[in-house]
Image 1: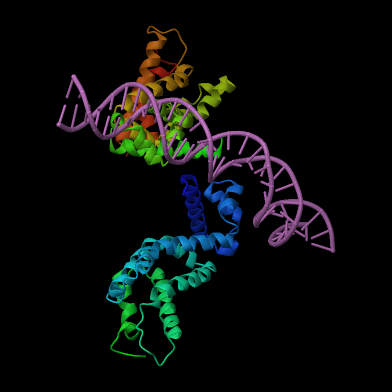
Image 2: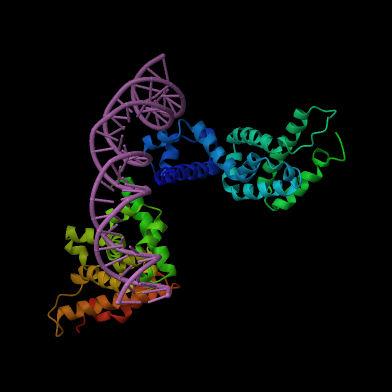
Length: 188
Length: 188
DNA sequence: GCTTTTTTGTTCGGTAATGAACTATTTTAT
DNA sequence: ATAAAATAGTTCATTACCGAACAAAAAAGC
């Protein structure tokens, strides 16, 4: 991507998250973002259609960073290594989330958090989809998937407000409260 | 000035001074500055002819900031207020120098310091020129002017290495070691 | 010495940013 | 309720930035 576009995008994202730290999403005007990013009016609209579009783009930027390795791995379909170490993969994701902490915390601090959570779940569905055990279950697979995904997103939201824990800690909490979903020995 | 030019200039100045903190002026390549500023090659040369030109521009930027109020005041030729409170004017300049401390320290840290000092003296000559008492002196006026200017620049250089002093402190040191030059009662 | 690599400085067609002007919509104030 | 002010979103001619390619000089390696 052109260096100028990259700079503009980053400037807008930075201005936007800085504003989100101080005021809620709906109270932020496009003009404030433009001023904060120190760009021209038409430049903003060349990149983003609306404020909602900006939020969506920022979420996608974050997810692309957080899940980049995982989604790449999925395309290779390395089925043998697919099920072997889910926990380390989750820990890995949590490390990336820790790296994007500043952005995520800003977004989660107000109404925009809802949008973020919904997009987050979409991505997580792809990640967990073929990680869960495939045995026939007494409970519908979609229910289990939704259960795990929601649990994970809420875990992350909680983590962002309780920063004293490491990715390993969080990973441990998550797997200890969901032993059955990833364990082939048991069944729901 | 166009917003893009402003950004580019600031990016180059920032990259340049960051480099000056880590390595000496002559060991810094134009390419390093370009990379640090994250701009295109041709963009750098659209702003600055050479590395020396960049240094000169940075000095001028600093002096414009440090002396902006004083040079403005001079154009008005407010002769009555001109001689009345030199000390507060010097203190004011020292406050501005304190504000540009980061840049100045970087430049002074190596060979580029020599260039800075020479430009600095040029500006200071204009400031002190009509501040010194105009009586006929046993010593040539130009000698006194050079004496004061050099003393002040060296004072600033010393200050940049001994940051524990306030502008008021430095101003006091300076005037206490040069009582005669500004005092109408005495003569060299 | 010589070759190779790095750095410097220039050129230019293509692209993104600019800002001012404009309309339309929403907020705020009175 | 209505006027005024702020915000949203569009358009377009102008300008700065980009990057790749180029030649030339300097530095480094052998």
